[in-house]
Image (cartoon, rainbow, N blue to C red):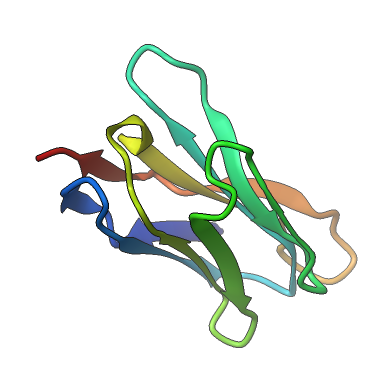
Length: 121
């Protein structure tokens, strides 16, 4: 079993910052890419940022310049630093990791349950 748990969400004023974390636990022999998605009420889930196993990052245009994704492989953790937050950033933020549970098994997608980010004055 592989479990992902996000944390760091909350209520923040416009212009504020948050740092989200996602920790993976369980039977893990390797983690390929790590990504963050978000889903606002009434909207489809969209990818916010991703980072490959060698540190190549990619960002959605809507957050480029305001967002930094990073990873700590030893801690099996992904981080998402969000700056200059806007009300439009309000959403549930989900972590996705592509994980190989055991050597010899295929890599699979695992999702966390999400953490709420609300940007409001």
